[in-house]
Length: 236
Length: 236
DNA sequence: CGAGTAGTTTGCGTTAGCGCAAAACGAGGC
DNA sequence: GCCTCGTTTTGCGCTAACGCAAACTACTCG
Image (cartoon, rainbow over all chains, first blue to last red; front, side, top):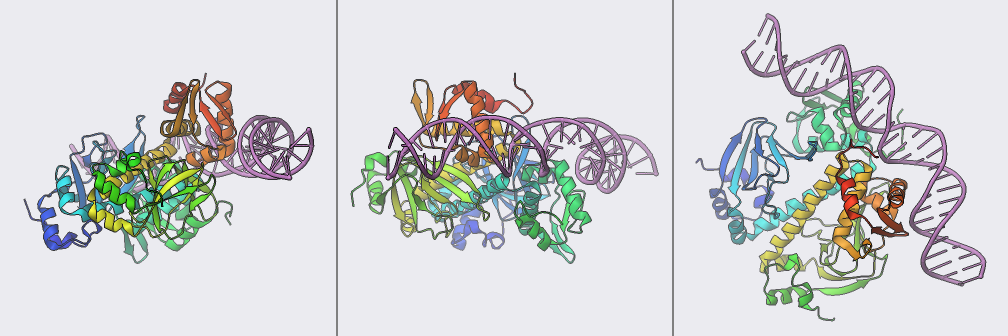
C-alpha cells in the first residue's frame, strides 16, 4: 500500500491541533482508493463499514425516498470527510455516495474509530465541529426552502457551489465538476424543468454561461443580488 | 445554589458511559434556572456564552430571516441539550430559544466546555452522536420538504411531536405543550392558513381533536397512513 | 462516421397552495 | 359579566411552479 504524504492533509480541519506523529499514526490505519467518475462509493442503507476522506475529485451524497425520488444532500469537496455514519451512531449509511468525477479517497475501517478517538480526543472534537457546521448549513437550507422562491434558492445553491468548488476563469467562475439541471433541482427542491427555464433566463441576461453538465457564473455579483432580494421586489 | 440530583440525569445519552463521580463533577459546574412560559432563553445572533440542558418543560428553537420570517428548527424535550453553539464552533447562537412552557434548565458556561471535554472525552463523543442524529433528522426534513406535499409533511410533523412529547390519553395522544397553527406551519414550510384548513379537514374526519394551541391525535394510525401514502394515491 | 443515448429546452394546461380579508371563536383581565 | 386581544376558520382569486410531451442538442460508443 502506498504511503500517504502527511503534508498533503496536515492542514485539514479534521487534523487541527495534531502533532505530525499523531497524524502519521492515524494515516497508517487508512488505505486509499480511486473511484472513477459515476461509480458508487457506498449505497444508502448498506452496512456502514468505513469512513472516508476525499483527497481529489468530487463526491455527491444523495438520499432516496422509498418512492425513488432523490435529493442531493451535499457535494463533498477535497479535504472533507464523508460516510461518518459510525461516528454519529448509525449502523447504516443514510445516503448514497457517488463519485461525480474521478476521485481519490482515504478509507478507514469503522473499527479504527473508537481506538483513534480514544488516543486522539481532538479527532472527536474536530469531527464535532464539522458535523455541527453541516447541521447549521442544513438548517439554513430548510430556512431557504421555507421562505424563498425557486429562483432565489437556485441562486444561493450555485453561489455556494461556486464558493466551495469554483474555478476562477477570466470571464467568470466555473463550477469545477459535472453537474446537471437535475442535480441542481435535487439540491433546491424543484424540478429539472424549472431549473432549465431559470438558467435559460439567466443565460439570455448574460448572468451565466451553461451547457451540458457545465455552469459558469459570468456575473456572480448580479446573482448575489438575485439571491438576496426579498420576495416582493419585482422584476424590471 | 441548589444541588442537582444526579439520579435525575444519569440515564441521559449525554452522560452515557460516565461514572457517578464524573457526572457529579460535571454537574457541579452547572447552575439551574427557571424560565416562565413565553420567555426567551437566548436570542439568535447573541454571543453564545452558555449551553443548556432542559430538565422540565419545552423549548422552541427558531431561526429568523433578515426579512423577519421564522421557521421552527426543533422543539427541545426534557433531557435534551440545546444552545451548543460553542461545541460546534460558532461564536453566536444561530437560532432563538424560547420556553413554550414553564421550563427548568441546567446551564453551563461555555468556558467550562473545553475543560470538561478534556477531562471526559465521552462528553464529546456523546455530543457528536446527538448532533449527528440531529443532522440526519434535518436531512430527512429536507427530503420531505422536497418530495412531499403539505398534508403529508404536516402528518409527519405531528407524528414526530407525538412521539417526542406525546401524552397518552384514553382517547388519543395529546401533544404536551401549547402549539399553534402558525408553529406547525413554521415546522413544515407552509402557512397557518393551509395548516388550519388541513386540520379542519382531519377534524371532520375524526382523525384529530384540536383547539386553541392544543392538538390531540385521535387516530394516530390513520395519520400514519396519510403520512406514508405516495403523492399520486388520491382521496376517496 | 453514424446511431444511440443522455441531457436540455420549451410550450401548454393544470393545480396546490398562497395571500388577502373578514368573520367567528375563545381565554383571560378588569 | 363584559371587553379585548390573540387565535382560528373560511371564502375567493391568483400565480408560481409542476407535469407532461415533444423537439432539440451534443457526447459516446461501435
